[in-house]
Image 1 (tube, rainbow, N blue to C red):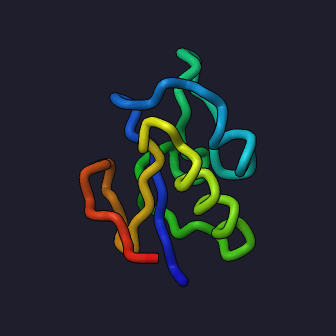
Image 2 (image 1 turned 90 degrees about the vertical axis):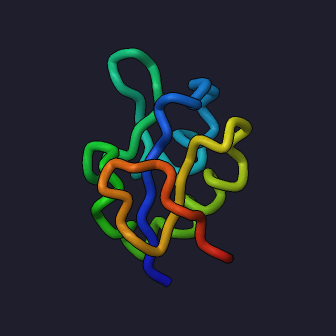
Length: 85
C-alpha cells in the first residue's frame, strides 16, 4: 500500500493522539498544532512502509478527523478524498 498523509491544521485540536501513535511522522509546530514532519505537512511525500500501520492508527484515533490519508499526494490540500482501507 502507498499512502500520503497530512494534518488539517484548521481542525486539529492538539490532543496528542497522532504524536503518540506515530511520533516518527507527526510532531507539533510552534503553536502546538500537529503536522506531518515527513514533508512539512504538504502531503507530497510517500509514508515510509514501516510507518503505514502507525499512520493508519493515528488516522483512526484522531477525534477531530484532522489526520488525512490518501493514495494520492495532497499538495497541501487536506480536502483530497480519503482512501478505502
